[in-house]
Amino acid sequence: MPKSSGGAHVQVGQLSKIFVTSGEPLPALDTVTMEMAPGEFVAIAGPSGCGKSTLLRILAGLDAASAGSVTVDGVGVSGPSDRHGVVFQKPALFPWLNVLDNVTFGPRMRGTATAEAGRQARHYLKAVGLEGFEHYPIYNLSGGMQHRVALARALISRPALLLMDEPFGALDAQTRGSMQELLMSIWQTDRSTVLFITHDVDEALTLADRILVMTARPGRIKVEVPVDLPRPRDLGVVTGERFGAFKREIVSAIKEEAQTTERLEMEAARHGGTS
Image (cartoon, rainbow, N blue to C red; front, side, top):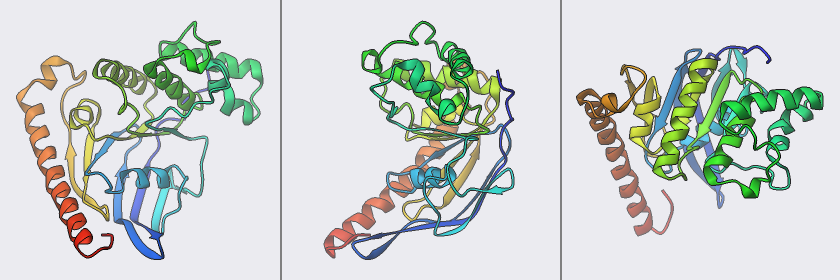
């Protein structure tokens, strides 16, 4: 297998993003500053509409910032890169391709020989528990299996930075737990730097080294919570007193911002405009 490039060092400085809706400016992010160490697993939580996904898309090079800077290993992000793997809530697979062809699509487009791309894909399909499903049509797979394919597709390029936007949000609780365990197993081996967006505080605490809570729109970093819980975070850890204390702190911070969002939306509705 290709050698891992190691986790990326990510720096975000004074990042802002303003959208224009119906001719009016709509601030989404306001001077966000953050840093991620190589191999660190960081989760971002916050109320709906606070700019979490916008931040991730800018880091992925899929959207441009209005102001500020984003660098990965000292290089400015100006567009998508092979070193940035992205996994969204919906797997976004090609339904006309089988499992193997979905996973090898990226490497083949980058010029990797079909045989070598296939060898790499089989390695990652085995890692995500899909050995033997290489030639299955996508539409024959369950939702959880499709998410495993999407994860293998992101991992095949051995990304230094893995960006995940609520990747397990649509799954049932049991499948979600299995995917969390799978992700932890792969991360502990490859040590990519991971930015993981979630609305689920338990999920964030189960996975992350550090959790950033964002404010209501325009999004800023409200609070940073280092999660110094032991790994693996098994039943004894997630039912423990310290896990509960972390959860109360984060839920309280998110609730404050959700109430702010609700108040702004009500004020906008009264004035017949948007917040």
